[in-house]
Every structure is written in C-alpha cells, then in structure tokens.
Length: 318
Image (cartoon, rainbow, N blue to C red; front, side, top):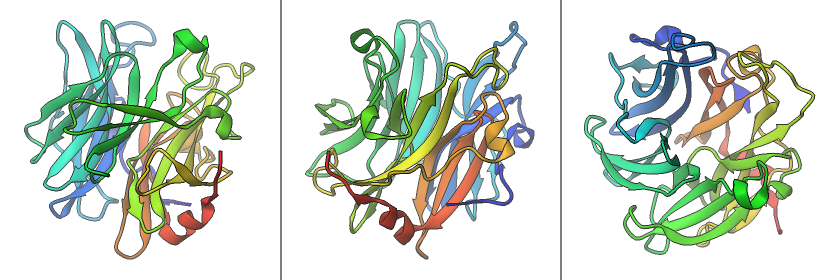
C-alpha cells in the first residue's frame, strides 16, 4: 500500500460548519462523481470534559477521488426520543441505488441500519437490526438472488469480553436478514487479540470478493494514547478473499496487515494508533483506492495495484 503524500484528504478544517473529528467515511463512484459520506463528531468539551455536543453525517464530492468539496451543511443528523445518533456510513452502489450502512446509537442498544438513496438528498430506511450489531457492509450485487452483507455482532454477555468476529447474513429485499454464519474469527487473525470486523464494502474480482477488515489488538499497559484518559487499543487493516458464490467462505487471506498506523496523522489524534478503512474503489487502470479513518480524527487515502492485493491473499483453509 502507498499512503497518499497529501494525507489527510479531509479534516475538520475543511468543513464549513461545526466539526471536530472527520473520519470513518464511506466512499463510492456514482453517476460520474466520487461521493463521500463522513462521520463528524463536533463540539468537544462543550457539554463537559470529554464529551461532544453531537454527531452528524456530512457529504463531500470529488472529480478525482483525491480532492474533496464538502457540502455546505450536514446531510443526516438523526436524533429523536429513541435515536441518539447515526454514524460510520458505508456506501455500496447496486444498480441505480446507493445502499448506505450505518451504526445507530439508541437508548436501548446499538443497532445496524441500512438505507438507500438515488440522489444524496432523500434517503429511505430499509432495516434496523436488533441490538447489538454494527460495521455492516453490503456486497455490490446480489449473489444467488439475495443481497448479502458482512457484519460484526457484539456477543458480550455470552463471551464475557471484547471478542467480536466477522459474520455473514443475506436478504431477499434489504429488509429481512437471516441465514447468518461465521466468516472469520479473532483467532484466525494473528495480529488481533481483541476483535475483528468488516471495513470497506467488498469489490468483485475474477478470483473472488476482495474484502478489507479491521483488526484490534489490546495492550493493558497502554495509558493515555489520545484525548481520553486511557486508550489501550490499536487498529490495523487486513485483507482477505471470499468465494464468489459462497461469500461466507474465506478462500484467501494475507497473514500480515496491509495498513498499520505509522504516520503521525495515524498515531496522534483523538485515539492514537487507529486505521479503519471505510471505502474501497477499483479503478479501470488496475489501481485500488482505499479510504480510511486515521486516529479517529481525519480521512486518509492509500492506493495499491489490484493484482498485488490479490497476490497477498494466499490460499486459506480454516
């Protein structure tokens, strides 16, 4: 992976409305433009030490996928008597629609949401999961007649700790989801000891579905690593290959992370040592753009050749 020399490509200083942390963006190419939905946490410290005033989802557009122009106001600022906030969008183009996956904090748990739009003006909610589930990403086409997604449930009660894995579910209509099965466990990733989960939506290749994932290692000796009193985790990005017809089956995986926090903008911010991919675009020239949140503070870009990423995914058998 080659990290863009001009990173970060989007940060709070670029946003024409109150913004503090701009990160965990979803990106797609739609109707001739690159479109980005980004998470904005704003008003740090205004409601008390360590607290933010709120969270919204903003929009930015680009002609080249590198230089971005944010819209003049946020797009989604969802808050009512039950919903606390919506955040962490992921974008998948299926036909004429853009499918948006996002997380929703509610007064009764964290839910995973799916919505659609055709114009980035109006949006329609398709489904909200029961608690607790998040990090959902939808595949860019139906497989065996069904919509498919990767997700990361939170089985805290049954496992007694952070020990979260990547799961698969499918749906006939984006509303009703089932047929769930395990894709990859934490124990299958050598550089994770805490949790793993989906990252950017998969892209289709001749060899399989190329899929990024996030991995987390935890070290209790870590102290103040960012703005919070204690931050003990480090996030990296991995990559794997899923079977084209059975997308819950891992057929290739890289043994090492493809992105690790090494640059200052990845190692110092709200939460230090965090890389979290949210968008992946395969270009016609064989280049792959991967968009990722860095230090939970800014949006960054890395590129690679598709052929090289596929070569990294060595045959895998659980």
